[in-house]
Image (cartoon, rainbow, N blue to C red):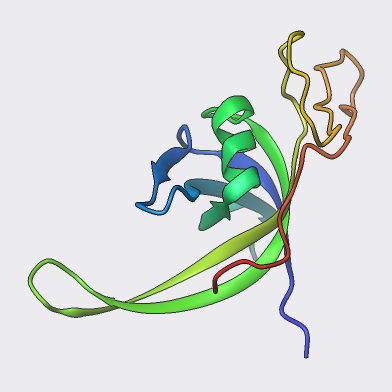
Length: 144
């Protein structure tokens, strides 16, 4: 069976970062993707979809350091559905993308960054297509 999703879009806000009681870092992102199409009258239309993204551990740390509102990102992951209860005890369902790989397509890396994983972040270029090197790769044991 395959559960894989690939998205490229812009972050709608800075990542929301939390550290769990066991020390595990988790980041939540809102990613916008937009499709353009012509309607029956021949007019161009835009359809923007918002995606909830969850990044764990090393990916969350990298998102905290490099990702900002408006960042153009490329994301690979899997679709996950969760059930939970809100503060009033009402049952809720959430669908989110659990990220496994994230590339920042327009970010800049701090010169003093000496990441142990050797991952690099592309710098912004003036060409039409920005460079795209891997920024982050998730650990294989995501807790979902």
